[in-house]
Structure formats: structure tokens, C-alpha cells
Length: 235
Ligand SMILES: *Cc1c(COP(=O)(O)O)cnc(C)c1O
Image (cartoon, rainbow, N blue to C red; front, side, top):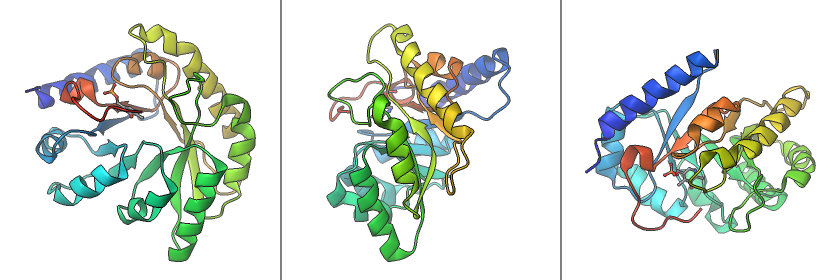
């Protein structure tokens, strides 16, 4: 049984130490990736000061979220979004959807939101590493895609997301994080109605330090909080 409280305390401490060393003044959000983990462990994380939780499957989130008894700030959706799950996801009132990976999905989401008069904060997921098993728009198409998605009035683009290399040496992720930060900065200078480049979601348990060094302000941490996952680990 992992010591969730201790893991979260050390992560927060390490993030703060690194941010100070880098002279960073902007807040860095620690997301607890709760996929595959039972509600009791989610409650333990919330009791230890976690305010944002993330799931990658709509079905699993639908089952678990209603059972959580502790208040928290945000539920984040970080998995590939199947269009037939959009209404179910929206019913869970996601704080942020990190994984908008095509104009097609964005349009379906826009249409569903339009029916209920809602807006939704989203990130565009970029497949910086070009790995086939990962979702995300290609880096080459990212600019075009962002412009097209920005035109959907119900979607508020709040930033970008990527998954680094799933390689034991976290340094292998650095060039990809750098690429995304450059794109993020580029769009920060654009005046696009409804768009605000605010969140740069990159870094997981093995490479979050490198991600923060390269400008991430939102890290998605699962195993470093909860221990290893035993099933359903597909990203
Ligand atoms: C599972 C997952 C994470 C967390 O992975 P860990 O290596 O356990 O920290 C982060 N981001 C996404 C998109 C994921 O699917």
C-alpha cells in the first residue's frame, strides 16, 4: 500500500523547490491521475491536499466520480475522447479536457455543448513524439488545427498538452517538451477571441522535472502518487 500522503507531500515539496530554483513565479498545478485506482485511494489523495484529479476513460469516471465524498476543484479528462461518449463526459462537468486531438472531435463536442448552452475549457493534445499509439494532432498540423478549433464558439482553448517519451531516461522527453513550449509561447502572442494560452500540460511520474524545466505548469502524476497500476494502462 503506497503512502499517498507522503508521496504527495514530497512531490509538492520537490515541485516547489524546482520552481524556486528556476525562478518560476507562476503556479504549477499537480494533477493526481486516478485511473485504475479505487475511490478510497482518491479520497486519500484529496485528504492529502490534492485539488485536481484526472481520468482517461469516460466509463470509469462515470462509475467513480459520483462516489467521491470529498470536495475538490476539478475533474480533468486526459484520455482520447470517443465521440459517442461526449454527452456522458459533459454530464460529469469536466474542469478541463486535455485531449482534444482533432477538428472532428472538437466539432462534435461543440455541437453537444451548443445544445445545452455551455462552454468548455479544453487543451489541444499534440503528438510531439510522433508515436503511433498516442493520440494528438501532429506538430506540423497543430497551428492549423488550433485556428480551426478556436472558431468553435463553445470551446475555450486554454492551452496545450503532450505526452513525453515513455522511456526510462526522462531526458529523451526534453526536446518534445521544448517544442510544445515554443508553440505555446507563439500562440500566447496571438489575439484569438475565446483563446487564452494558460495551461501547458506536460510531465508524468518519470519526466515531470524535465517538463517543468521546459515550462510546464500542469503535471499529470499517477504512479508516483498511487504506485504502479495493474490494469487498463493504455494511453
Ligand atoms: C496515465 C497517464 C498519466 C500518468 O502517468 P504516470 O506515469 O502514472 O504518472 C499522465 N498523463 C496521461 C495522459 C495518462 O494517460
